[in-house]
Image (cartoon, rainbow, N blue to C red):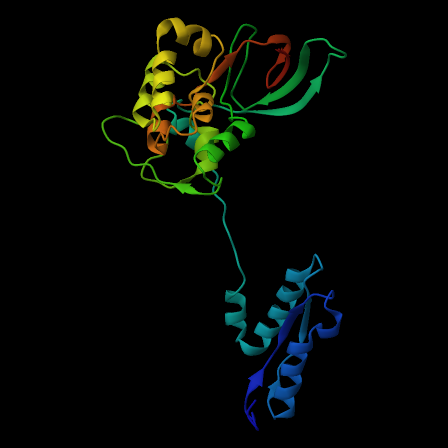
Length: 288
């Protein structure tokens, strides 16, 4: 510290954790005291942040606001106030998957109405968008989200984190998932591709080119024969992901895997409508 800091104006904010009681705020306290003792002008009382407290950032924000009031002209202090406008596009995924404009409905209640070991039935009440109507016999279109556990399996298989950004670049066809625009791995696999679709014979056969071991290549060749494929893949509904997990040494590139998957499709259901009063629907869904 210089022998004299006359003319220097300063403020100190310290952050510490009380678990280290012997040194809690020792450094910012020393800096604050030494600056003042050497002639510097303290603009504001030292701020103390407790890293174990839930309001740590509120404490700093309050201290910072007081600090800015001192050092800045009023118009500058006002300019530091943050503002943010949120624009929400509820149709982005529909448009990318080429489902067009789809009116939405808000679920206001969702109750299980069966008990014991009976097949699950739910009473679901929906409020439709203004201008929408529903008659008994109409279908409801549902755009699903892939179960989180399935998405996690893909991330594990390809050694990805959910927040990794994937940039897809393609040619030769129109794609129903984002291209030339980074998207998180989690969003890509949860919202744009089908992970549970049974693998086709061609998909099974295509895995042979990525096999590193002769025994894997031989087993995949056998699995792609119609008489073996039908009972072991089609009827058991084994997906491409299921097969890749079974053959960890088959190194299918991520791009080839995504290209092989069908786009996420709408699910259409015709529920048992007990009461249809626009704009409120009372529906009975059976899950089994």
